Amino acid sequence: MHLKINDPILDVVIKAAMAGGDVCKKFFAQDLKFENKDVSNLVTEADIQAEQAIVEVIRREFPTHDILAEESHTASTSSKHLWVVDPLDGTNNFAHQIPHFAVSIGYWRDGIPQAGVILNPIRDELYYAKSGAGAFGQGAYLSGERLVTNSETALDQSLVGCGFYYDRGEMMRATLRAVESCFERNIHGIRRFGTASLDLIHVASGKYGAFFEYRLAPWDFAAGRLFIEEAGGKITTCRGEVLGLNQSTILASNGHLHEELLELVQKFHP
Ligand code: IPD
Ligand code: CA
Ligand code: CA
Image (tube, rainbow, N blue to C red; front, side):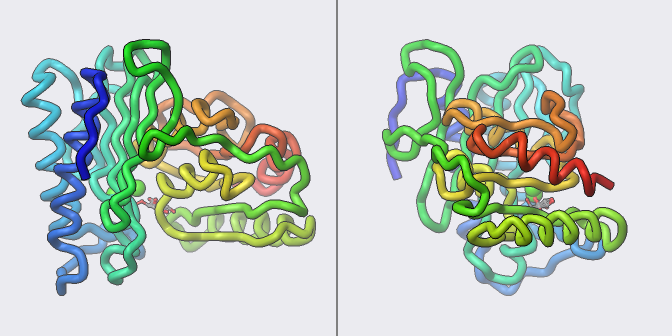
């Protein structure tokens, strides 16, 4: 995969994501040991080494910037120049040899997303997004093709994605109730693919009408938020608030379905 986009920040996000993606690919489908951070929250050597490779690229290019990354880098979310990294989103898939996972990196300045990359290393799909007009312009793209959310206004014509947080209690039950309520509205189907960043890409590229999850970490959506906005959709918390860089509930949609789904997910909000 070779891509040259004349944008200094985006160039680095892409380089870093590809470094992480190479590590994930190298380890994929090997008999990897994994540790449990929690009952279903796993971590493998690939998560750790991919994060190291990504951080190395960012540090080399922007030594004064801050990095918040899932495995071992912390930073204040209000930092002026902040890189938010999920080195391997979809570790559960990865650990069970399911080829559906991603590297997700968002660059935020003064609390506002500026650039993002979500890379599916197995399919060699590199999604990139940039906010604001510059040499590169703005928008969300895959291989030069702009991503656009779909224009569906009816839930009964839509696929909806969801995610389950790691608990086996309140949040899991709330999610199941919300899913049941979606089915009662005759949605085309529910999807739970296990990689939040790629779920957000499914909304940005018009495949899902919407996606929700009752708890995600900043690295799960730091890039994805920009993709939804640049593709013409809407993304908020499950209470309709602005989605900042805190652990949060999340609702992303094509915009048209937002109000109806917001009412639904809010009703079951744990
Ligand atoms: C997880 C995935 C999953 C979502 C979880 C996330 P990880 O990320 O994105 O789809 O449901 O809430 O934590 O742990 O594989 O990086
Ligand atoms: Ca993740
Ligand atoms: Ca991860």
